[in-house]
Image (tube, rainbow, N blue to C red):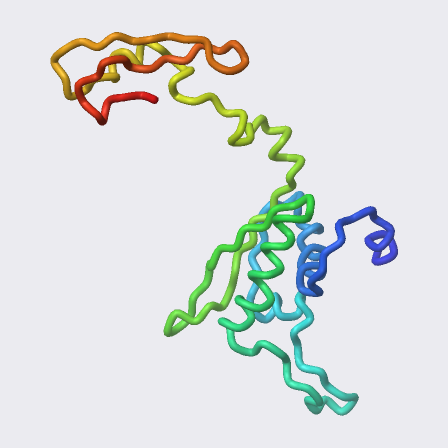
Length: 176
């Protein structure tokens, strides 16, 4: 199974934490959500104590405090994975112990291909409110005014009609 993962034409991640978290999260893309304890997350990221054969601790685990773990390993890994890879990870704090100590986390794992297939349009392709309904714009063009105002319809970019209020007495009702 490891050989199969290494042969994949995957993404190149710089941080060791990013690559470890990515490989782990890739297994749970179909599930979509995985809850893990902080101890399990430390094992996933490779942040456990190094012990010798007799069980004595040779080297203490790095990033023992939760704040350091989150800032130096988890935030960096999440940012890099979300930017460079084919999956998106969102972090939720699900379990808190006494004195607000974080005990478990929830990771929402989504594939970028799933979002593209679901019909979600990127922000650059969404229609502006002025293009949706010129009647709604005309009725809401002057909410504070008793006087009527004209509605100018002109051809915008790509041949689409846009509407804007003309001679509006109230500054808050202008649509530019």
